[in-house]
Image (cartoon, rainbow over all chains, first blue to last red; front, side):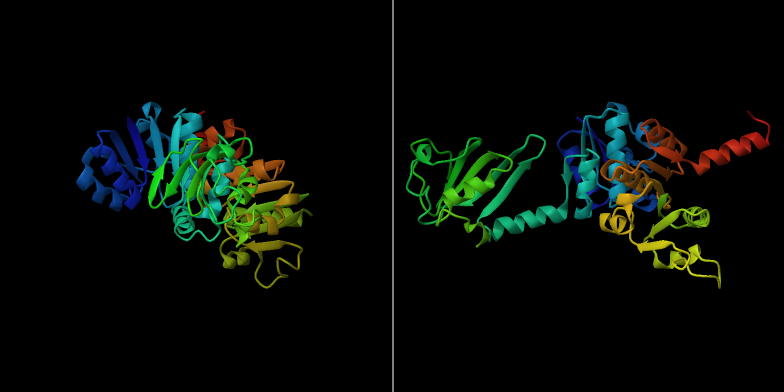
Length: 226
Length: 140
């Protein structure tokens, strides 16, 4: 696979190293001359000097034949531009953009640039996972496909506790795909009995959480807000 | 006619002053509070006294754009010193707020030309300079 990485900061440089290690062809673009010279010492011709929001710099890097463009500069507007031009002008099918300011996430979405990676967002999700004060953790959201995977704890006395998976009343468009019990995860069969204290993973159509959480909550109502 | 201008540098502030003098309603956004000074002649009435609006904020801050009146703007001008900022905010304003006339300054002629083809109204001072130099030395 041929990958163009834009921005040779810590993220860009380490990505380049990893991808090279895995045997991919990589070009790493850096607009700051001093940073470029540092990176070029290590990577040689893999590093190229130039502002990737200039069309000819992208063309020189071979954007027409690239499989993937990754924009990880510290400037959100630059990341937007690089991805937009790569996708729409040079018909590169896959782009990945870094969002530095999570407030700019909406702009990336509006302009059709995805997937995006936001460090702030990732850490927030980790906090959510480590400190699940809402009892529900979003593990994955495939927005285009309108699918989500969530993790829920089965509370004592919940409608689902003690029932076979097949008998748990779940809305159409949702499925229990995994049960975590005593530190181990397994894929349940319809016969598996759900126990209080289990963590269950469900895949569901976007927007069904509100119907699903009561099934695993102690009062059968919205313990989501406890 | 309500004109919203993001970026009160030489270009943005000059256009803002002309538009206000011509009787348009004008709102200006700039990240630097001091750029407000460029909107006023020394010693004269303040920008606000003349009826102008000024909001401190960056181009991509939706709250600042809304405070500055983007929802009822007839014309939007992106004239910050960043090409990519101008191109990004212009598209946001066009698509999200449906402003009818959106114009943005893009120094790089190549980027200006391509985005123009995509339906943005871009103005490239660099391209204008090139053409004027060419004319001045007799090239057509």
